[in-house]
Amino acid sequence: MPRACEEDEKSPLYISCENGYLDVVRILLKNSVNVNKCDRRDNSPLHAACKMGHFEIVQLLLCSKRANLSHCDRRGGSPFFVACREGYIEIVKFLVDKYDYVNKCDNNGNSPLFAACEEGNIEIVKFLLSNGADIDYANSNKMLAIDAASAGGYENIIKMLMDKKSPPKSDADEQLPPCVVRRKKSLF
Image (cartoon, rainbow, N blue to C red; front, side, top):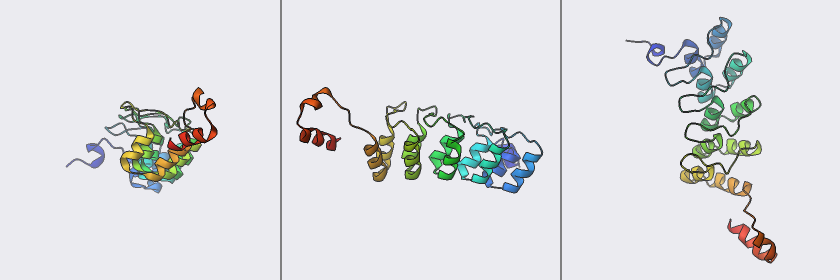
């Protein structure tokens, strides 16, 4: 029977990152293993640590100065994207300073904001919005982040997105009485 690392092409470092074996990761890094060796789906050990929420391992990999933060898996997801989707705010906050692509999308055009909205990760949605996430970006299916939140029934996220979005202003608004303009905005 093949070992797990042979079956999925997962390296010992990948498996250690995935399972949260911090001390094993330290030992492997000291022995100069390839920190960017990916599994068969093109996920790196950093992807695995981000997906499973192993913050200390994420820090360790990036402090090694060898981990590639901008590497994307087969679906086009970066480690930052994965952390946003999975809901690990501590990792997202740590990575945003090192990875300045808050709006970098996967192969389907889904942004990190879209992924966080789709999964109902309200704290990450709030954080991404405060760091310049584009709420008007539509994916390849013409869906917005608010559509993802709506599909999941995440009312608080929908309200947050609606509050962040400013209603379109037309020239006609300037000719209307202020009470009518306020009413139009409240319908938005």
